[in-house]
Length: 334
Image (tube, rainbow, N blue to C red; front, side):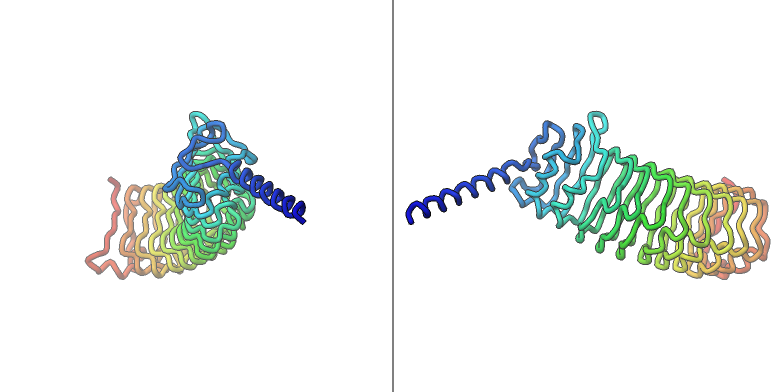
């Protein structure tokens, strides 16, 4: 009986020791140079499972199976994480999905200045509290189907200053609360019809400084809550009929500094809430009669720096707000 008790006690001590060694073997992330001098993280608190925010700097290349990623299991209360790569000495070429899975309370994630060529399917899986995701200057070129998906609380998604060339359908999926989407300073030249179909609560869409050449009535289909659309500095050459029919609540439309030389008579049809329209710095020589019939509430109209010599009466007679003291129109070149 005594021998059995001693054996049980010994087994218990061995178990605790092994478990303790297992925990101790996980990399300590906060305020410690770790993983063979590959990453340094600042935290608000040093204790295990206590930090709520963490800012990490990659100073040498890391692989998906490096031990450093297991260290995130020690910080299960983390709500904010920033990862920045020091490009002069090393980089990160993948999304550390496994590390993110170990921090299920994350509300905000930012990954910057990395070299991530593609976002794989479900790169940010099971982050049910994530509200803000920013992937800036990461050299991203390709987005796989459902690359960013199944995030029930996300409201802000920033993919600025990357190398994305195409927006393919269902890349963004099941993001019911997304309201702010930023895709500026990429190389986007193609957008699949219905790409934005599932983003019914989006209110602001930034697509400026890309290479978009053509849009159709289905390009922005589904954006029934959108209030601001920024297409500044793209390669659009014409606006066909009904191209903005999918954005019935649009308030501001920025099309300046494109190459637009032709606008169809019903291009702005259905934009009854539109108040601000920017068409300056294009190649317009004329405007079709009643082109603004579908957008009678425009209060600011920018047409400067085009090739227009005059505007016919039948162009502006559908803008009843012109009699309002607050109406603004810029026409002549600077």
